[in-house]
Image 1: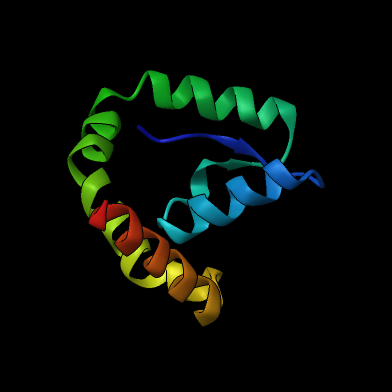
Image 2: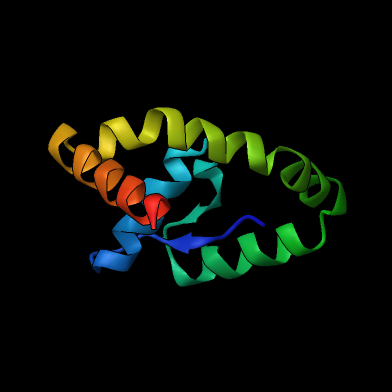
Amino acid sequence: MPVITLAGHAHVSRVGVTLLSNVGVPDLIADSPDGYVRLASALANDIARLDQFRSTLRQRHGAIAADGCSRLLPATSRAAYRQMWRAWCER
């Protein structure tokens, strides 16, 4: 399901902004506490939009995995994660 985030200076806020931007839903980023409440309320009451999120979530996630990872992680980090995954799978 979609997550709403409050943009801010804390690391968690910046991560939320990055993730929502990369999946193509920057409209779920609030710029104030009041904006956060408005977004949450509007989304909770928009069943059609929630259904649309549910039906496209896997596709959006796949797009991040395919493209977003290359932008967010240096090649050396991606290679290290790939190697750790292979080692785990071999066990």
